[in-house]
Length: 86
Image 1 (cartoon, rainbow, N blue to C red):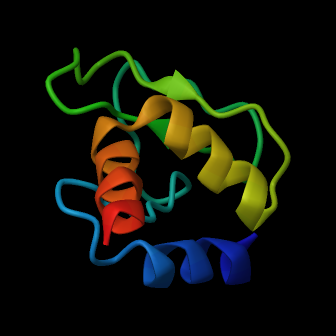
Image 2: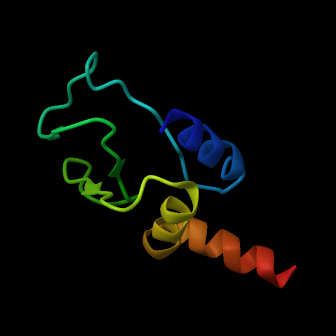
Image 3: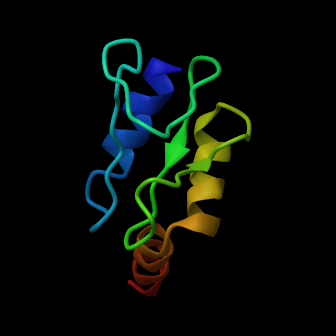
């Protein structure tokens, strides 16, 4: 998963208001965040209740994650729309 996550972060590094981050849940516990297995992917939407992330349950490949972000991230969706206008 790490190489895919790194590639995702690199490809989306210029998308405003979108951060692809890593956190080691074995070294950092977050109250109220339930981790049942690894890797666990959590989505925190801007302006949402930070204590209620959305779990990503899709395939763990680059295209699936990007498709999911296209549906769930207003920033990524806006970036793609603007990019297609150019």
